[in-house]
Length: 240
Ligand SMILES: C[S@@+](CC[C@H](N)C(=O)[O-])C[C@H]1O[C@@H](n2cnc3c(N)ncnc32)[C@H](O)[C@@H]1O
Image 1: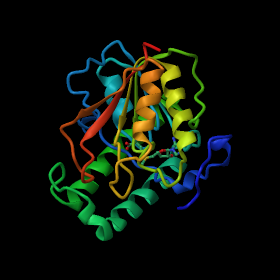
Image 2 (image 1 turned 180 degrees about the vertical axis):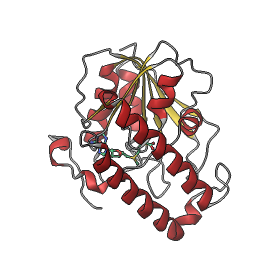
Image 3 (image 1 turned 90 degrees about the horizontal axis):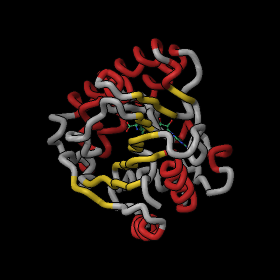
């Protein structure tokens, strides 16, 4: 922990070991990004960072043309699996010290949380092994796609959450990049950092997005695990 990434050439200098390579299930993504009523079939979808998630596999199973990006992708599945298992064990072990930062409602208890994470990892690894072309190694703030490629771009548990690692300029550049590759919506969750404090540059970002014509809205979601993390940010990338 402790590497702060600044805006210029951030992806080159960033030590990816500092950010846990974890993942959520498709059902968790739906709830935390408020996607329950959003049609995925026939849409081109990006998950960035994709982590060890079941979202891309789940979206494709529902008819989406889905891709994921993460700097950890690229090596053979056994290597990625080792990294994911190590980070998941660490995350579960570390939970003891910070249990008070969480609301035990979505998950019954730490064992239930761990079982969701292992389930997401299993789905991810099977899909990564079978459909590796869907999982692209890259890092914000630079994505390997032309402008206006995706109908929906999801970005969870990186921006805002790791505010101690990524400075504000990085957040601006990353958001601009997510909007560039989207022709529809960009959705982000959570809007708080690891200490459950609302990201303190959020108002500035909302103003910047508003001025750029992206009509940002902060929406309540039916999901709260980190205390106070019950909102997502929806950005209209079609405008601006
Ligand atoms: C906590 S995981 C979140 C994964 C997933 N989105 C989720 O909600 O479960 C954070 C991910 O960000 C990835 N990451 C780290 N730096 C990144 C960067 N500069 N651009 C894109 N992804 C990055 C890490 O490899 C890790 O998989």
